[in-house]
Every structure is written in structure tokens, then in C-alpha cells.
Image 1 (cartoon, helix red, strand yellow):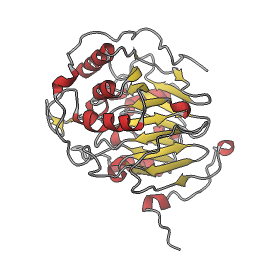
Image 2 (cartoon, rainbow, N blue to C red):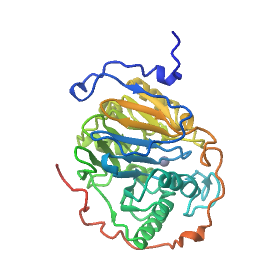
Image 3 (tube, rainbow, N blue to C red):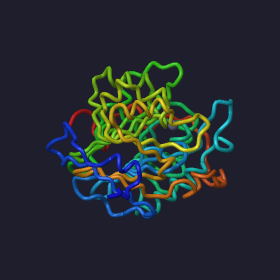
Length: 365
Ligand SMILES: [Zn+2]
């Protein structure tokens, strides 16, 4: 009998899940909802949560939804900087608002959510993660803004300016911070720690906020653009990195996803958030390392947006059309006028950068 599922889904046929015993049956289900452009809007059932990896072209934008309707948006997509000085890809110029945030992330979130986000987390202040955050704050809103990365960039200052104007508290959660979005569910901050990572070349990436979410079952690990030094810092701290689903670091660059790190995570499913880009990402070496640890790799540049449901099993729904489904895929449409947000460069420091976060609790439990 011919299996009607797409090739990647056939590779995911149910098999044993060693070490995960009592939490969930030994099944990894894949529901290929091709053509189902509509994403279910009801909050996840108790004990489950969902992650929607939005197709924002080259960049990250991941919406986590928990029982009771609590939400965490991790990164927002945006234009990416390319190696030539002052060049951005695709298009010009470096400013928020940003075409991806204005035309993709904020409209999609508005459509999916009935109100503001509970938390908007920006893993670091590179444009392909943070460029759309101003638009999301303005058009969707958030009850808290979490920032990772190295403090002091202009993009971050602009973002803090928007947050301040809208009365959104800005926090810098550190490793050990925990947030309980719903009873039985937890979002843990695993990185950065108290000591900055020593990195000459990629300090911003290596200060990415690293988050792990679960509701008592399968875990999701989100690592921003963490590279080798950041991975090594996590391993050196002895952090428990185990996760069933990994958001692959840095769009699948070969400077990330090293074997020792992947061996500590042991992902069953790896999601690469990528789009047309001048760097050749994802890199074949990183993909090979992921396959070597037994992970099935799914890519937003091939599937469009990908929805993953974390219940007793992991279910995957490629939920929005890939390529041309919205402006991020086939070249960006015009950015909304830069004046609409009234952004000003701000030298202000984060409101409570030195205080422990409120809402999420620092330390254990
Ligand atoms: Zn990136």
C-alpha cells in the first residue's frame, strides 16, 4: 500500500522513544495538513502546548500558546544584515518598522490572538530576530518584553523606546528564571548566565536567550542564534538540555549545532527557520550533524509555517503555504512608512535591567 504522506512524514513513522517512557506513548504522530492555511485558534488543551514556527523568510518568529490562552512570542523576524558594511538583505534600509514585522508577523499574530501577547521575548538584537519586534509591540502588544543579547545596540534601544512608550515592562531574564504560563507548564531560561560568554566574533549570537518549554511532556528548546561558545558555556554549566524538539540555532549555520551540544539535547525533531539568504543556510554540515543524532529535520523554507503540538505525542502540521504564501517568502512588499511608529533613537537603559524579573520567578521551582 502506498503511503500518501509526504517524504518527510514517512520518515517519521511511529517508532520507540527510548527514555521518554511514562510521559507519552511511543508514537510520534505527523498530521500533514497541507492546504490548511487556517491555524486553529482555540487555546491548547490542559497539559499541552503549541509552537507555531512562522515562515518569515530568513529569520525566526515562534509563537508558543499554552492552556488558558497564555502566549509567548519568541523573536519576530525582520530584515537581515549581510556582510557588506551597511547592507541589509533583502532591501534597504535599517530601520524599524520593518517590512517583515509590519507585513507578516504582526498581522499573523493579530489574526491568531484575541489580544496582546503575555510575553514578547527577543533572543538577541539581530534584525532577523528583532527587526519586527517594534511592529509587534505596536500592533499586537505585550504584557512583558524579555531581552537577550548584548545590551546597548541601537535596535535594542529603539525597541526599549517603543516598550517604554507603551508601558511594557522590559526584563532581562537570566539562566534560572522560570515562568509558569499555565498550571503544569513551564518556560525555563537556560541562557545567558551571569557571566558573559567570551566571544570575539559572535558576541551577540552567543548571548542569545535560550528557552525551554514543556507542559509535563515533550520539551521544546529554543536557542536563538547561539554559536559554539554559547553552546560550550551551556555545556560547561552542566545545564540539562534534553529536549524532544529543537529550534535549530542560527538558521542551520555550521558554526552552531556542534556534536557535543546535539548529544546533550538529543532532539527527535529539529526545526530550521530559514528562507532565501545570501549565506547558503541551512548549511549541509549542520544538517548532517542533526541527522546523525537521529533528528528529523523540517524547514520553514520548504514547508512554510510549521505548527507543532506538544501533548502526549508530538504532532506536526505544516500549516501555512510555503513560498509565496505571504510577503516574506517571495520578496518583501513595501515597508510601512517609517514615521508611523514615531520611533526615536534612545540612549536610555532598560527600566529594570538590574532587578530580578517580576512575573517569572528567578531560581528554582
Ligand atoms: Zn538569525
